Amino acid sequence: MEAKTVNVTDSTQLRQLGNSDLKLSPLGLGCWQFSNGKGMVGKFWPVLRREDIRQIVQTSLEGGINWFDTAEAYGGGQSEQLLAGTLNEIGGPLAEEANIATKWWPAFRTAGSITATIDERIHHLAQRTIHLYQVHSPYSFSSVGATMNAMAKLVEQGKIKYVGVSNFSAQQIREADRVLREHGLRLVSNQVKYSLLDRRIEQNGILDTAKELGVAIIAYSPLMQGILSGKFHKNPALVKSIKGPRKWTAAFRNSGLQRSKPLIETLEQLAQQYNVTPTQIALNWLINAHGENVFAIPGASKVHHAEENVKAMQFTLTTSEIEMVSHVSNQVLRSK
Image (cartoon, rainbow, N blue to C red; front, side):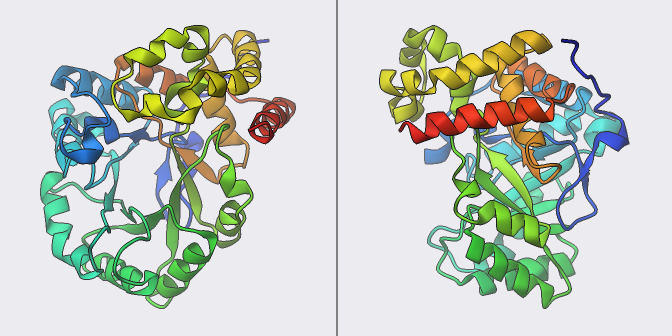
């Protein structure tokens, strides 16, 4: 089978992000791994060399990715600084026009922290425009309404372009959008964990509510932290070499690898037909299974990861192939 290719740098291949006028590539680059080993969250990943970060960002840009997702919590601003500094070093139209999404960390804080810390975010991003500012989770000391009122204030002040959330339930999405409407604004996106091995948003109302309200889904951990690449199934010994806590999760145990093996075999079969990798099949399913409603933010700690990401946008699975992958995925999830 010959893969259907597309020119991802052509504006016709960009998608509107929810209730916004942002035109983004189906895949963005998740930048958690740029945390520089700082903070509890940042220690999840090894420290990357500056040259590797530059190549990862440049490869992403040249491959058609036009947005980057970072956060205050990623190394206490280290990811934001490294991303902005790298974009400035690369220069040129692609880097200058890159869209930035970042997040406010809510734990043990009130909504007042949103307006109090925004200048720090802008400083860490080297005065770049914050196109999408997201509440990292709903767990602050303030209500959803108070949080959205503070976010709306930032839009009114011209400090951010659009408002998004992360890890919000269906009810919280609806409440957030309701409050933003009072300011003449709309909720743009909800960033949630979503992959072929974690499809809870299809059952708990999050995906249906997002579609109803025109809110985009941004899928994080779209490869289940590397499980969907299939490399750990081929060589389980690789699990021992993983740095960080993910090696201890159920998916990386022998029993977890055995459960997900039928899905990996299906991805490998399609990968051979398209002359791509299982990773690219998994990402392509994610960004095409629900029309243009779902975006994804795979990370990249090595340059070849970035190369794989961009190639995942250069073909399109057929409807029947998407259905087949969905069916096998559901069977695996029901076997837990």
